[in-house]
Image (spheres, rainbow, N blue to C red):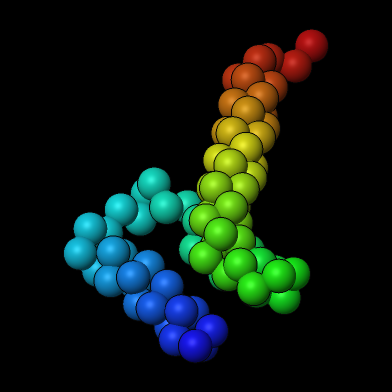
Length: 85
């Protein structure tokens, strides 16, 4: 029964990805969902809840990482654009 619920959750996530692909907005979600699903299943058989939480956290962390990379690139561009004295 538990395997059936996991298989159903995976098929719903995959099916939703095929129906409405949004790769730019799903950054970090799939890897977070995979880790969260496994952790939720091991912690107390709450794979779907863990996958949802993992998706949210993974998306947040990826956006944070992208913002840091953007800031570093902007800083590098500013320092390269200034003449050295």
